[in-house]
Length: 102
Image 1 (cartoon, rainbow, N blue to C red):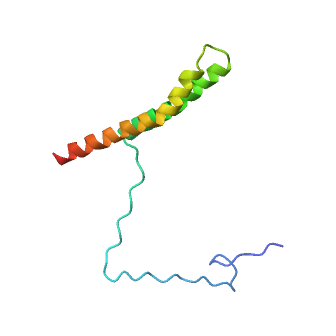
Image 2: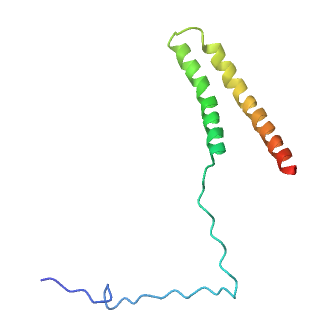
Image 3: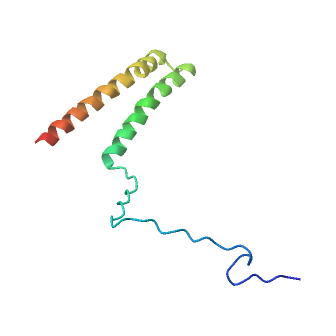
């Protein structure tokens, strides 16, 4: 035998609590933050970062396969990549700072 549910949804013993409306005190609600969006410049920077990160792995893996003597270039790229990236980012930040001062 099937029992029928009450019209309010749920058992009649359980009563739903209504949440009180927050007091705003006449202040407007804070603006919602827009969703995160990547600009084309940011996508270009991310692509450069990932390519700089994957280049040493490529050279080191090719050296382990015995294709040429690529271990030295892989280690050089691995060690100098972060410094090179820091230099490029520093130059870009300085250029943007000068551009915004105008």
